[in-house]
Length: 124
Ligand code: FES
Image 1 (cartoon, rainbow, N blue to C red):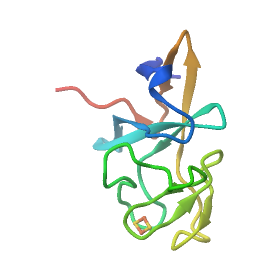
Image 2: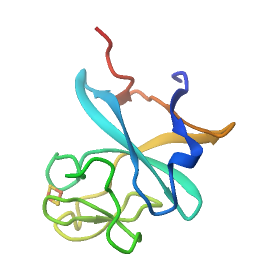
Image 3: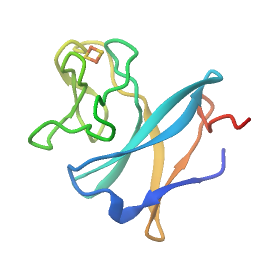
Image 4: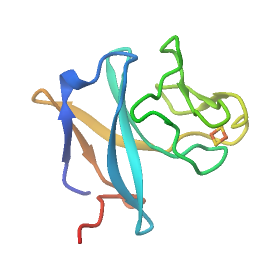
């Protein structure tokens, strides 16, 4: 188990509002993750669409659809359940889900625990 990494203040995440991106490493390659708040809970995912391996947000941090009900990929409109990451419609249908990250809200901050696949960014 990796150490918790601090991401942002808890109040930075409004329910259904903009998310916070952060740097990660997948297989030694730079990538990004993000956290959002949905129905009170903080959720974190690898920022990689299940349709094509692209980041979801064209405008940094804009992960929700207009109604704040789904996470949406800006490229072709894949929809994801913010609570589970499961594909909920669009071209990702039948292709699984966003890769969930372990995130916790504690002491007024939001933290991420890297895992064996989505690791802390490599410093150099
Ligand atoms: S790359 Fe995300 S919907 Fe196609």
